[in-house]
Amino acid sequence: MVGHLDADCFYVSAERVRHPDLVGKAVGVLGNNGACVIAKSYEMKAKGVKTGTPIWDAKVLCPDGVYVKRDFYWYEVLSRKMLDIVGSFFSPLEYYSIDEFFFRAIPINHGQTLAQAATAVRDHIRDVAGLPITIGIARTRTLAKLFSDTAKPFGAVAVTDRNHERELLARLPVTEISGIAGRRAARLAPYGIRTCLDLADADGKLVRQLLTKTGYELWLELNGRPVTPIRPARSPHKVLARGGSLMGNVDDPKLLWAWCVRHVERLIEELHYHNVRTDSLSVALAWKNGESTGGLCRLPCPSDRFDELLDAARVALRRAYLPDATATHMHVIAPELRRARGFQMSLFDPPNPKDKAVAAVKTAVNEKFGRFKIRSGTTLHLPAVYRDPANDFDICDVRGKVCF
Ligand SMILES: [Mg+2]
Image 1 (cartoon, rainbow, N blue to C red):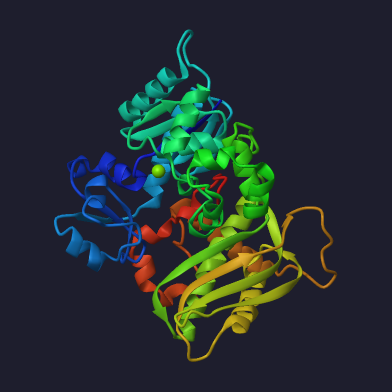
Image 2 (cartoon, rainbow, N blue to C red):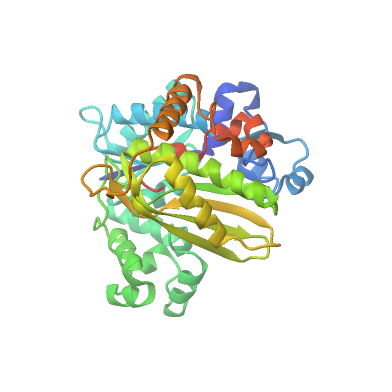
């Protein structure tokens, strides 16, 4: 049996752990530019605020709400704490996302049912970490997630009986399955497939025709045949990237370059952590007019060096750049990773001792005094980004998640 654990409105619950006065209030957590609600409490949800609602609309819908800025560093601290607790009960355990884990479910104490185990762990996490969570246990990951999603908030269900399983599936529309949304559901509708049970009972070949391989795998999992195992460690990254919103509209090339260098610095941190180098660097930009552009620059040999990646980024950004347009998002991507050992260096690549020394000092100071304490002067064009410590740590900096 597989268990799925999911924290209830995790970011809000995490804020309530350190600010207990927020308990019972309508709370919204805002994204990095403070413009959108990225998580909301059930009290705020009841007022009609959704994930993605801009703050100015949210304030109209829920004027008494308390709005706080996200702090992924703190959320990671609690996420690891939860992971430790769950890991002391169940193994193997998969760190799927910052607030979702999968695990092999077994009774914790002799003579205990799985439902009792789920309840005990749920209550234990609330008592020890202060976080409300929901656990679903079923024959496969897809079923476990489905049942925990529908048992929220603060639920603990174990569906071990086949009739119980069918009964629950019959009550759920297919769109409750993550991976089946509007367009896929519309493809199923003409065949009378509306509930999860309809899908489970449908002919596998038909499902494959309608929803391709991924849909077929969901169908197998709905029928209790596990497709995806529990992965206690994530597989190595094939690609690493850093970036995101430019916190507003950027049309000044100097600012674009400052963002690009900031992302290169963060990307290098990741390359070093994973002990990989990249064969090329690409810059992807999203523009306000809806266009998106990309530029790629190949490196003479695989690198994780600031000076070399900076040169590549300059070329890649120039290739992605649209003059007289306004950019909104940027990603700097290392698309071809190589283990940092075991490849041929270029004959014409003498490492510059000065650059090497500068990079070493930068790393040493930042390790001792905190990220970005020493950074490229180019990024000084972004004072607002550095003034707000919420920007020091992003959700992609939480390492080890399978879904990222
Ligand atoms: Mg959650």
